[in-house]
Image (tube, rainbow, N blue to C red):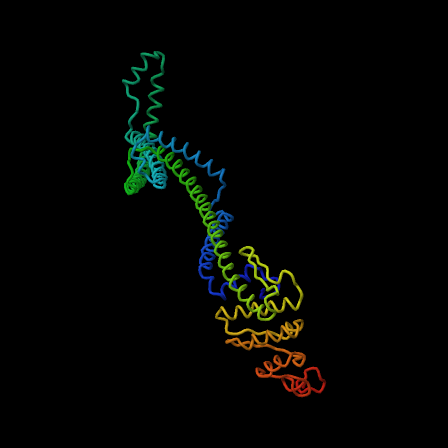
Length: 397
């Protein structure tokens, strides 16, 4: 029954079922199965290129254990932190933690700059210079102090401060510019945090820890979801495969029964009721045997093929069949006469090529003669008027 050498038997049976117009429900199952196989393969390819991660059953169990531990940590954060954090998206929490970290850093810088500003301002105003009272107080503790020397030093400092006044004012201006720039950055961060609509009382560390745990839980859950999806897909493919094979086997069995009954009738017409007919036996959805169990001769095999074609011609929309002379060579004259009678009775068109017609009984010769459309022979009756093999053939010019 193969359409070509080494054709898989499942493919041969598929062609047969299509001819008998019973393949449609099988095709639907097959298409569904192939679609799910493609989807599963796509997931495997995505895992191969690290787009997604497909885990094993043991990893699935490990992930569940990790998720439970992480949820306990999350519960602790909520218990000792803020209940409102449960409504926070982890991505927003991560962003908010970054904003808060930057805000706190800017705040520290601004405090340092304000300290620097007041120190510069005091120097610019001459604050902190020692007075006579300061020196008198010093003598209480250090009676032998050289007050003249100390006053000279302080006078030198006063002169230096006077000279550096402009520099102090420039430095103060620069510090104020930096403070304003930082305040602007902090104001923008406050606006961004307000847009996130997160509780302001939650600390940066709490947000960061919450985001880390929540993201890890989400990652593990995503891995588990993919695992379950792959498992579900495998189960569906297996179920579809079982249903496909079962339905295929059933439909093939129905078709083979119809064919076998017709071949038995045709075989009885040719040989009588005592001759074993050929049989198409479906063993599995992708396996079959065809032939006469007790006779595997060439003539019998060729006759079996003819009967199969005649049965298929009768029960399917197939409009015609064609048999070449080579399949008649090993069929005896009496059975060949009956086969020609079967050809002649067919309501559909059958093309055959046959030679050595004179060896057959007269009835067979009459059937051949009355149905001959084209007769070929040597010496001018070739298909194209002359033999291709002759040197003087016009076909070679």
